[in-house]
Image 1 (cartoon, rainbow, N blue to C red):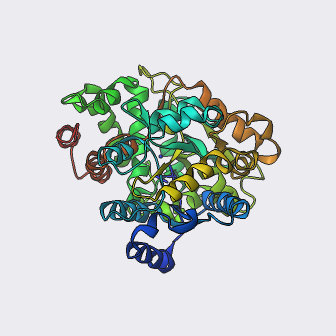
Image 2: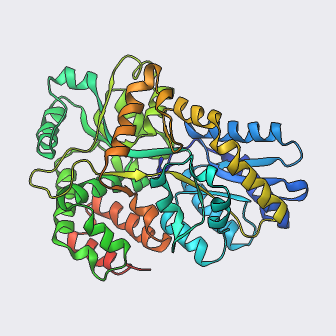
Length: 441
């Protein structure tokens, strides 16, 4: 929330491998055709891995079957690889026709460089398309009042997952407050179970802890000031308190031993939870689909629990608030040919808002960004989907993940300092000073 999604996000990903690299090389040397060549053909880059890739590919296959003369070609990459490859392709003027992303700061940079198409008028002329999408999803697609991306796929709040079987084994109850969470740490450690799984090498996973702890402690105003570019916004006392709390968690062995080397793209953090090696995990709602796919009968047997992040005792933040991905986003490259752009818009206005698209994302374990999906929440996944929909709809604030809301420059400094914070390599005050230095950049 990278794939992040995880993430998102996102942040999911099985290896795209050499085939993906070869495709990138081909795109990089094919001139304008990399953004969609003759007959309206178009290209699409996005993230690999479950649960998202199969449903992205299914949408493309569905479109191609209905439109054989204007086909879409897809290439999928791991989260971190994708970020670098799309940046390189845009810089070289050879992007894919459709650019998958998270909106926010990254999209703002695309707009500043005139790399993506303004969709505002097109959406006004196709009001029925816009009306099928949850209104809250358009915030991260909007720059200076204009819409530069179509919200797609799913709404993905970050939630606290827990292993019910482990809780029963230790004889404890799920936490209702942050204080309860702290009380659980020594109890799980005493039984040789990590209190929290964490894929610390991926950095954005660590960030989720800061996002919730700052919000629960101080509300959404502090980060809003950062996003707005207010000088020294990170110097708010609530930030130092949040950072100190995080380092106290590390010192008290809240996270799995060796968390600094655990990688989210390999879903190792998920495995620690469903195999019972860790009791809890703060992660995006997309994790549910991964655990269903990879965890054997763990989810089906009722072993997985979930909740919104609990309130911090004495905190000012509204406990209904959430953070994560209010949607995923598809932009159209301004370098794409007119024919390729039309193919992308047809994809946007037909396949990506049809009933099969909605049903597919529900089947993936996600809450669709498309309206009127509640009737599809049936079967084994019904309760999870209803709960995620409730968290998303009832949140007073549904904040976008920090690394997506900020510019890539500020986000990289943020992620680097978050990693150092968890590894006890910077003090809270040093962290604040470092982040204040990139506000507005």
